[in-house]
Length: 479
Image (cartoon, rainbow, N blue to C red):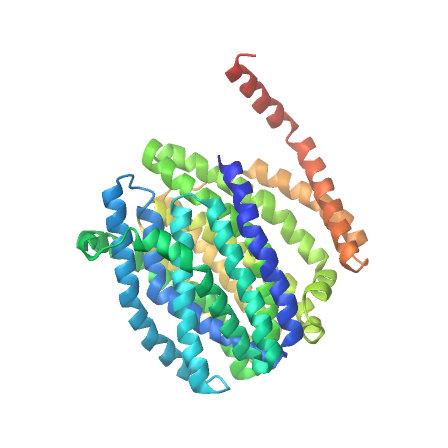
């Protein structure tokens, strides 16, 4: 079931990811690094507002909706979520305005504040909708909605930037694409199920007790993820902020997307297994999730580091390339650690209903990240921000593993890791000798060669397990 859902989510999330990658290619050729830096800081504001104000509601919906099969309870959950969201919109209005002024972003302040607030609302409502689809295990509809949003946002953004609106056009385009894509799901999933009569105070209490402890966690996560941009802006300026943000966005649209896809498919299955079969089954399923996450992410990490120059040249505009090539390897390792923490280690807190303890490692890491940015950026420049992120994520995953393992048993499949690492290493050696070839055709061939070598190495290394699984399957069929 996990492999099936992973494949579906690969299509439904991977295609929008490709559109996101295309968007990055276009935006970095239509906007200067200074303009992209302004856009990046506004994304930081919306992300921070969403994490603090809305994230707990989204996570609670994901946690409690799959655990209820009763239609009446589902209507209570949806009604409570929707009405709570409307209240939180007012809070977001105030929070986004305050943060905007604190960060002192250049440009027409009134227009940027208005766009920031509307962007915050629209992105939060979109996140709640795709969370609902995840909770209902509807990967196809999830993919349609994600594709519609990313494609419409790209088309509207290109149009508005072409008529001379620059960064304002980019923001307006994203807002337009998001809101239009949400019209049908809003009518279908919400308006037909919600009513004031179904608003339930007990459901809200369950939401707050589960989700609110996670608010601080996600806020601290975002601090690690985005405080570097704030410090870069303060110490180095908008140009470097734009370059750093583009390198980070490239990794998120490619490498991190792969890890997200696996989590999208895997987490609801673990929740369902915990509810229906108990802790032992959920632990085994979590171990499978780890193996698949490693199976995809480790060779991708090695391949992207080795092919860094070709990837940057193809997907990022010329003004951004030189510094991005220095940043990419450091940021790739950082995101690799961050992904494993989010999509494996941190799941223990949610499965064990101990989300309050999840705050501890992330507070330590966020404080460390702020301190290191303060020290490293003036001394080492833009690369100092990347090293600050790497160290902070490393510390975070170590502490999180130590605490999480006491809540919900974590396992590290050593032999699986060694085999995957060996196969990835063989692939990396071959790609190293092919790294100097440049261009689209070269990259496609490099990826294909890497996949073939990696798959063949895995086949040999896991031959015994494959034969064993085949024998079990044949016995089950009575062959």
